[in-house]
Image (tube, rainbow, N blue to C red; front, side, top):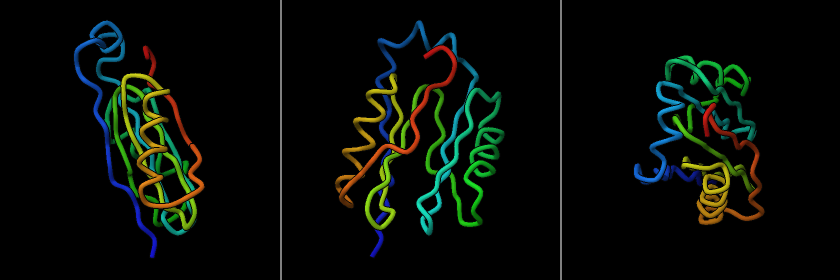
Length: 121
């Protein structure tokens, strides 16, 4: 049975005030297909809806759904059986680390397939 991690990790709001101001109002999204393991992304959009639309378009499969929407940095890790984990955070490294850990709770051989930050992070 395929298990999909649905965990989002939010970075603490303190400590990121300077960079958050630079990226204020920018949205990013990662979409995921549980049948293929493919993902798509969109970043630096003015609305969450636009980011989600771009991520779904880039994913390119009918069953793609939005795994996470964020304003800082995000990552998705996919493993055996297309189990996955995702995360958001104040840096790409923290998002990647948390996505890998989350994925590892549900499957094996997890690898980062998408990781990026909005402008300003």
